[in-house]
Image (tube, rainbow, N blue to C red):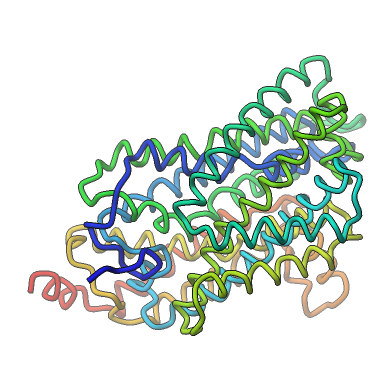
Amino acid sequence: MSVNTEENFLPANQREGSPRSLGFAWAGVMLTPGAIITGMVAAGGASGPGFFYGFLGLAIGVLLGMAALGVISLWGPKTGLAAMPLARLAFGGAIFIPRIFLIFSLIAYNGLNDLFGVNALADSLGISFALAISCVLVIEITVVFLGLKAMRVLGLGISAVMIVISVWLIISIRDIPAAPIPEGNVGIPMAGIWLAIALGLSSSISWTVQATDLSRTLPEQTSRKPLFLWVFLGSAIPLLVLGGVGAWLSTNDAILNPMKRVESVLGGGLMSVIALVVMGVALATANGLNDFSGGLSLKQMGVRLPRPIASLIITGLGLCLAIIARNSSIGEVTQDVVLLAGYYTTPWFGIVIVELLYRRASIEFLPERANSAGPAIIAFSAGLLILLPFTATPIGNSLAAASPMLNWIGWFSRNLMGGAGAGYLVGVLAGATIYAILRRKLINDDSLKNVSQS
């Protein structure tokens, strides 16, 4: 019986490809203007750490996060499971909790990408916001109904053009000085570096919740070392190159209108207009994978709609968020969305990695559910609560200032770390440590071994 690739498990006879093809697929996902904008925010314009320290922090975050992506991708070919079904090994029936977080994060990322995409189309073509958002909607609907294989083909075409644009940008910035450290700053700007690390981690480790959605399409016998290497390189290199370009070009005006800054660097004229249109289309296309994963999660949660229709729900909500954020500060919206939308992935990642390491000897036989969901739920909830005092986001600081009851959000960051945020690293460590302790105490590992040997 044929099983659709959108179901939880993908049979071995429906898989194809190689680690190299998967690496290029991830490169296509990452080759978007969003990475340039993240780099601009990391360098911080006139109030940030500048290019050197901003890019240093961004690179540290990206490399750590993409190593995590490569590690968790290894279980895709072996199990045939998408990322959230794979997490059922720890969460059991309670997997709907991180799925809810996933859906909200996808909507948030979609809204941010839509906002940038609309600005790119509006600036380049001189059209109204309403017309530009209509164009983005048409692109996203088309991508949603094309499906995953067609999405990959389209992604490869856009990626090829984005490579040309990236080279063009690198050549164009040779006579532009890199974003400097603001005058008056003394010593190493640790707060700015930590913010850049957090931005790099968010743009990388947050993809772990979709990692095996792609890697499970490879044959079961796929070699692990090439798989890790190609996923790591394919995902990290585009983010580092485009993030570096963005950090180099960072100014206050660039953060307020990133696409306008890119257009001015490219020199204006027809070719610059075409480049911005391609970037707008690329942002809308990148949302295709978010829409796909969001629709898949809704179906796995029991929503009885065809996957394309479920995906369109995510599309519509993302566009609504873009409209709401239209007149907000782009820099603050970027920080809030990029950071907040990814925090939940850190305890999730820690929990899932610990569970997979426990099962590494019996990986050939993976029961669908955990023996007990309690340890995962406790570790996930505790991890989120523990990381929040270490966060540094505009919205978190505003909430803390507005109410004494919320002052604990970002408390360590504001009071002991000079505004630096370490929420991502704390989240991984807290989730993994708490889950490892509770799993050892509350789950009978002997029963698991007996099941795996039956």
